[in-house]
Image (cartoon, rainbow, N blue to C red):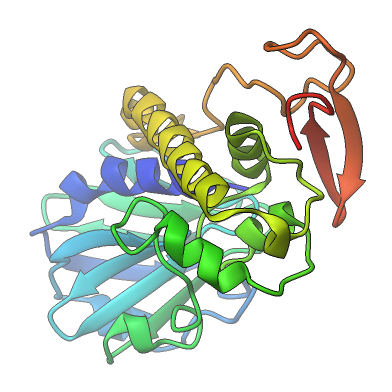
Length: 271
């Protein structure tokens, strides 16, 4: 599933092609996504001008003067900008034609993504209203995380992956951040000190920022039919390295399931 850095890279990739260009045609080729695409979506978009493309958690917000299209990529969805006469591909479900002839196509083989429309401010939408702070925003602090965690018995890894706590910390980034902060993924959230939460927030920021920076080199993937954005090639410290030696102490990393998720950690470096 695309994580926050992948979604942010998608946003940066498509934004310059959309903003300021009127939608001259909108087609819903298959509206049976995770939730049915609104039947009146084409009518909402035709002759309207996208003013900005923003991101909230893993949702993309395409803002117009009269409302906002809210897009989630699901497990297999992708957006790409078509600048030539490339034919539709299998699993292309939505196509917007823009002033100047460029087209934005949404492709989703598993159809777990979604498109929504809201006339109201998008932060009030039912999908966005419960969300916690953005991990790279000033609202996300170690002190705030510490106070929210008091009395919580759930594992710290599950706590930071809960979108009500903070958005966008997926499984890979949770494993990496906990390793960087030296915190065992199974430790109860309420038993992590304030200082360690400050270190954890710093680690989350560093890891996500690095992933987004790596994504800057893939912006070309969002133009034309062959562009298929994937996960960034990163040098991961623990995720996917179960049984291999820890980069810090040399002890074999442990790999186990935690909350139905693959979890890799160092039993010596993480307490």
